[in-house]
Image 1: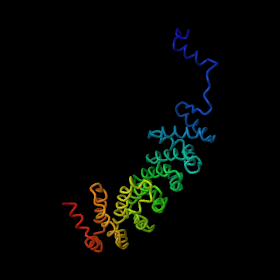
Image 2: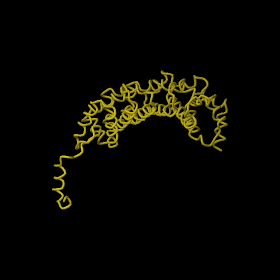
Image 3: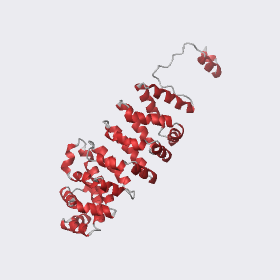
Length: 311
């Protein structure tokens, strides 16, 4: 008989049924409009791992919208705080990984960048640099790269000692993929006037030096995919360090950088290393302002190599 009912009566009939199958307890029941935030908070506070994972996934899906990022950052900082706690303290690898994806989204919008600093999340985030899950480290660093792509973000990263922490990780990181992100982040931070001095004081020149030798990369399982990307990033970082007078002098005083780089170029002469060649020229242009830099480039036949490439 249902087919003879009008739509309003059909809907009313189904609403009044007593034999409706209830939702399973672990089913995420989305609330209407902004009421969903209260439901999310209730589920997160309950602490059930399976439900927490589902809620965090749903939040991450919604954070693809800048409007949603704004709402969480401004109106529901209690949920933002819960997500950050899960990222730092959860024993569940999957929950930490999804939470790190959420953190990455919050690093994109300027207003949420301010909240991340105001609530000391940026100061605490270096704990995740040592997370056992590579994807967590990767997502956090991607987030910080987004965070650094504004003057405000770079200044706050310096204020919270992020540069010092990632310089230490250069020698400890076990994944070249993650290391490449570390070097990308440091390159962004070095755009700040104060950053090169801080980097020099924390032995950045020495920490990157081992990556100028190809044999060093063989200890990494992903060296075939990322060795040349990492090397290019190392050279770009040396170039940024040497833009200031103190950096130029420190790179020259190290005593072997120019020789090692020219030796590498001669030993690995390949057309697919254009990025490495460009980043090397950028570094040499900077250090050649000093007399010692000119002398070393000439002594180790750097000019001969570049002239052959140009011709």
